[in-house]
Each structure stands twice: as structure tokens, then as C-alpha cells.
Length: 344
Ligand code: NAD
Image 1 (cartoon, helix red, strand yellow):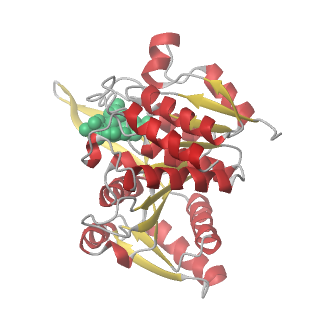
Image 2 (tube, rainbow, N blue to C red):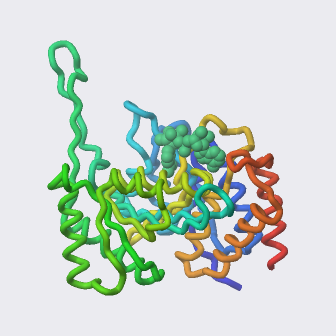
């Protein structure tokens, strides 16, 4: 019998519980050996424990060092700080991996296989923001500070370059805006070029592209890219763009990796507009579960999960509304579980 793998489970807000339940059904059908410790965070944390990131949730992840997390709601403007950002900081999850692969052939962007590696802890997301009052307007001026460090840039670039070699990627595109933000993103560019010259030359091709040009090129000809590595804010935006190339946010998984813990999630948010309607697409978080299976060295289960998703979408043609189909979350999950059991 396989040894159980302790893992924290955060169903999350909005559509979170619906898509996480669907994922658990798939993982159960696969016989994945996770021993789940259910915890709360986000709006659910505020409502149940008065804290968007309760201590018990932190303690659980500190113990298991592994989590599957549904989306967590963050109020825009005021309110509490993003629990996602806090989790990344707490566990120093410095690498955010967002793979995008075409799962439904024949669309506008066929045969996409792109990996976005985003720095997850620095840049303009560190939350150093404030307003300056002028006369009677307390919000007359808004200011934000971005911080990128040599060490932080080197750490994510090494991670990206090593991943490129380990996964056989031929080209890495370093995305920056060093023409305007000469210090803030210049340090990332300079560190990447230096690191490549020192240790990685010849192992893959490195190109550097300014973020605005990169966005245009991704839409005109995404096949020219293999893997992107970039700073926090640009990575957040470009990975959503890339998710759009392969059918939208319902298809995009993400992994947050640090030295001591890893948290797997969908790229999308809590989708409050469709929460509770039973129509959410669970594929993104299921693909995150596949990344989690690979992380714990169970690549065969990850492969079976991906193949079952592929067969459900393309052979059975069972698809949720965001993909132009008519299936609800439950119907998709039933078809997927049947596919998984057929390959047991
Ligand atoms: P969102 O990703 O929740 O939704 C954007 C659009 O995509 C909506 O129309 C939604 O219905 C649709 N969508 C998203 N996921 C879908 C799915 N699985 N199936 C079908 N349709 C799907 O983005 P938002 O509306 O900007 O954010 C809502 C909340 O989620 C906010 O509070 C935000 O802070 C939070 N959020 C959390 C995370 C996270 O936990 N990692 C990420 C992004 C946003």
C-alpha cells in the first residue's frame, strides 16, 4: 500500500468548493494517496474565524508543506490584504509556474505549449503603497514602491533556467521593461544575462523582450515562444494572456513553489458571478492537482489525470459553458471519473 501523503486542502471561496470537490472525486478515482487536512482562508476565513489567513491554516501548511488551494476572494481597493500574497510571503514561495497547453484542438491558437515562470515575492506586489493628502483630499496622490533584489532575481532565474533544462525547453524569453523602469526591472535583465553567460550558455537559447512587445507577439505568433520568465506583475498579466490562448482561465493551472512548501491552485479567481450555479469549469484546478502529483513524484497518476481530462473534453465532448459546451461541473466530473476508472 502507498504511504499516505499529508496535504492541506483549502476549498476556498466562490466556485472554490465546487471545483475542489470535483478534483477530489478525480483524485479519489485515481487512488491518489493524499491525506487531506481541510482548512479555511480568504472570505471563508474572515466569516468563520475573523481572519483571512487563520493560524490553523498556516500551521497545517507548515506541517504538510503541501497544499491544494481553491481561489480566495480579495476585496478590491480597501479591506484585507490578499491571502494569496500572504501565503506566498509566509512560505517564501518564490516561483510561480503557469503552464499553458492547448487541450481542445482546432481553435484560434492550436498546439500551444508554453510555460510562464513568474517571480512571486518581489516587484510591485510587495504592498508598499500609500496615499498622500493634498488639501482636503486624503487620496490626492497614490504611491507604490517596487523592490527587486539581485538575490531574488537570481533565485527565480536559476529556477527557470534549471526547469528549462529539466523539461527540454529550447528557448527562454526573459521579459522586462528595463527601457523605462531601468533600475526595478533592469536588475532582473542584468542578472539574467549575467547568469546565462556564466552557467547556462549553449544549454538553451536566451532572448530578452520588453513586456509590451511580448504581449503583442504572444497574440500575433505565440508559437515563437517556449518559456517566459519575468517579474511579479508582468508574470501575473502575461500568464492570464497566455491562459486566454488556450481557452481561458478555466484551463490554466498554477504552482507556487518554495524551498520548504508548495501550493497548487488554478490561475483564476473565485468567479463570484457563477458561484453556486454548478457550471464552473474544474479543469484548471484539476491540472493544478496534476502538477501536485508530479511534485510528489507520482507522474503516472498525473499523466492518467491529464489523459482522462483530454478524453473527456475531446472524445466524449463533455465541456462546460466557458468552453462552449452544455455540461455542468457535476456532469463533467462524472464523465471524467468514468474515464479515469476505465484506465485503472
Ligand atoms: P475570476 O478569475 O474569478 O473571474 C473572471 C471571469 O472568468 C468571470 O467571468 C468568471 O466567471 C470566469 N471564470 C473564472 N474561473 C472560471 C471557471 N473555473 N469556470 C468558468 N468560468 C470561470 O476573476 P475576478 O472576477 O477578477 O476575481 C474574483 C475574485 O477572485 C476576487 O476577489 C479576486 O481577488 C480573487 N482572485 C483570487 C485568485 C486566487 O485565489 N489565486 C486569483 C485571481 C483572483
